[in-house]
Amino acid sequence: MVGKALETLFIKIWVIVKLNLFFWLFSCCGLLVAGIGPALKTINELFISHQFNYKDITLKEGWSSFKQNFVRGNILFYGTILVLAGLAYNLFLSVQIQGLAFLMIDFLLVFAMIYAVVTFQYTLLLDSYYEIDLKNLLKLAFISTLSNFTNLLKIAIGICLILFITWKFKGLILFGTFSMIQIWSFTATKSWRQTIDQRLELHA
Image (cartoon, rainbow, N blue to C red; front, top):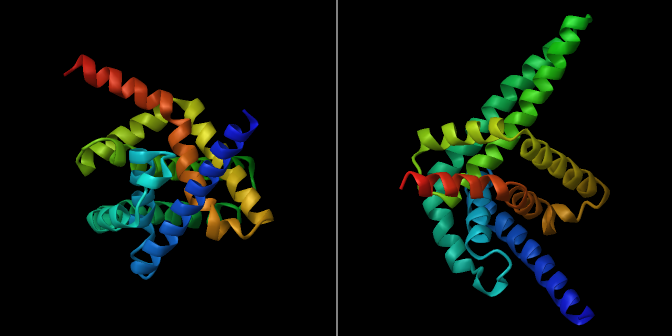
């Protein structure tokens, strides 16, 4: 029993490492600037398709997925980056001014940045999980983040915890950080995706 548990643990660790290495490989294929978004979407799709069946997660399938996701992945990634940049700039301006009203604005801007990151995670997951056009994808992602505040908190806290651990152990940047964020987001939203599936079945 202990041996089986250790085997399962090592398999999960290997999947995390493998997906994270795929992320860096595909990001470099896009010279980082054009590769990060598609690479994140690719490791999402690979995990959703195979989860911890590590033998089925192949470089060939990953490369095919990366090429298909190249445009859409960059649109989602840089759309989020633009939103975060705008919010960060406004936060920079807001913190220069003292006063209770501006303190409240600071908190709202920080929350908006967290909300944008979580919404981006939802777009990656939902786009990998369903066949959906970009406009409806964004609508569904916004609805998803607003409909279940608990899931929003779980994703946000999970990402913060992973980043904190990464700050302590820098090697995770190469071997685990990005894949762990995607896997955690997938796990945290399981109940909501089941709800969507049930509603789709009712309207089928």
